[in-house]
Length: 248
Image (cartoon, rainbow, N blue to C red; front, side):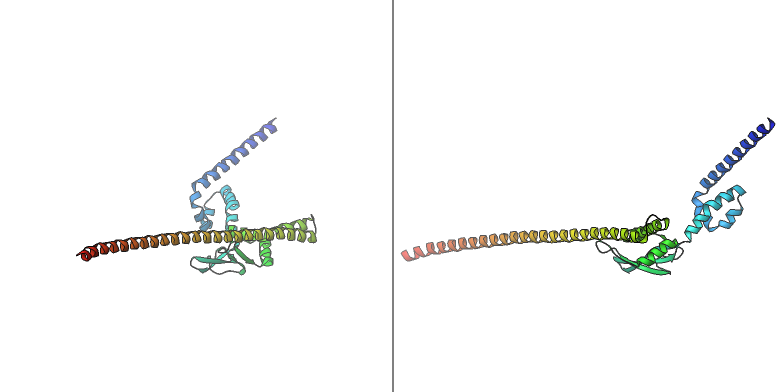
């Protein structure tokens, strides 16, 4: 009985200390949440001022943040001129500035066309994605649209034995063809819309020119009528003036 009672007491004390440590960590995080970036900059100093339990939780929370902050990024590097920017897709350290030093250039991205023009080295992009490089949101969308993540997914299926390399390639080609057809349909619709807009503008301009020509013709006709009436009135006055002179 005493052994059971001791076990219960030990269990209760362990639960109490565990809850106390969790509450302390939550309060600590809430108190210093707005200084999280300062924690990252002065990690060593803050780390050794904490208790053992807090050091453990900080190691679990902050170390992944530091690793993610220093990871290799796939991102855009701005090129072009003012109001007409296009971008290079580069592999760079996350600590480097946006337009600074980079490891490798794997493609270009021009958002000024409709749809946007992407020229990418597919093999190198797939290599860096498989290596663990972290893309930005825009680059992730670009790589997904170009099929890099689709190929990564299919390669994962090949490694797991779900299908072989030939089946994976066939699936990728089918997916790529569907994307090309969709892109071509978008281009066709865009060209048709441009042609219809051009035709509508031409018809509107034609109608406007016709209306202007009608106004000009009406104005000239009114001026000619007024001139003819004035000449007729002047002739009548001259005739009236000559009649008394002839009688005299």
